[in-house]
Length: 316
Image 1: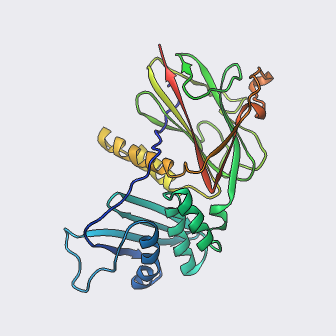
Image 2: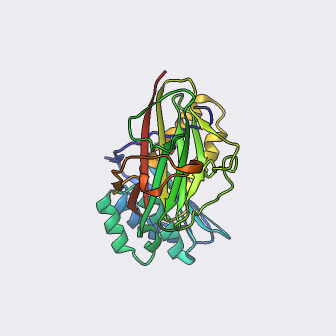
Image 3: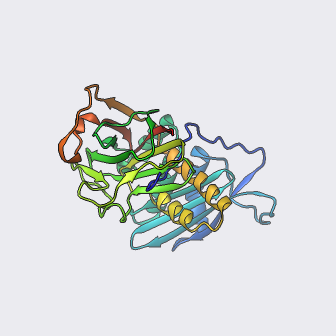
């Protein structure tokens, strides 16, 4: 692609299994006592991710299995990270006090859960997870220069132009990302080089990327292979994706770039559960001025967040 690049979505989830004892260490506790943070978070980590215990009085050895929690607080609220073997979670919350720390952990874990586990966490912590568990839906379309939407598996060729249209049914935070045939990643939105629109996108409005009056044009280059597009919608900010893209852009070598890209793919995949589609079966027609009739897109629905993936076959 000339101006785009994106991500591959894994449909499965990593199952973490440990025969040995694992410990939860608090690296940073913000303004709270570290032992308090441990006592609040260990039951949740045990229930929804992996068995952990407080570290022993004798301390931990370098060879021990450990998971590390870091809590920081700013004017924007809490930022919590939980990392360890096969696990890298980032959660945020604007809720004050220790409830905010718990909510940040739940918000980060929520994206890694199965549909059944999500329903359980929404029921158990509904006072904290109201916005995370609410339904989210939007019309999504990736379409060509003739206003014909691309469907999964369609062939594309060098020089074809395309646009993206989003129309959320509620205020949403969105990411539109492309992984090109050369395994490069590019954020179509949010990206100030493409559009001045910012998150959250507003209910009922149509958003075009690039804007219809823009000098920016998206087109496929000469490299054959698979083009993959991801549309990620969430009722809450996606700080983990923001951080991973900053890390991706600052990668110093190809191996670091690919490793960060793999993390990014998992973060995107974790939001892809419980997606429902309602496709319009009417034949596509041209629309003046490059606009697209919303009825020609797909209405996508999920709880808290969803991911739509469109893979195209780039041929010569």
